[in-house]
Length: 132
Image (tube, rainbow, N blue to C red; front, side, top):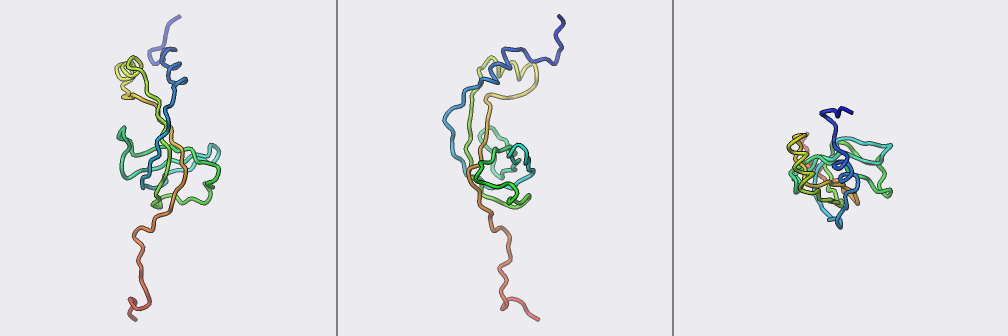
């Protein structure tokens, strides 16, 4: 049987699929929602400050207490989420980098716990400030 050049070996996919996640870390960062995935109960978020691996865009699982329909795309939120991390072996990381040009030392999952709409750039204009 001839292997395809783009095929990923079974030992690599096994490790990735069976990755063991460490205890989650709670993170609080500001950013805004890019996209909603209603069927999967997920959102894509752009964070102003990057995470430990340098990424600024993450896909988060949304807990059932939060209704995606109530969220606003493009508005600034403070997100409180859990980061779950599963380190990959050196062998898998080296294979991905050498053969696939993917730099990846761990697998991450993110779970949104809460969020708060930030009052950014609002004009606090009172009647006294408006001249006619």
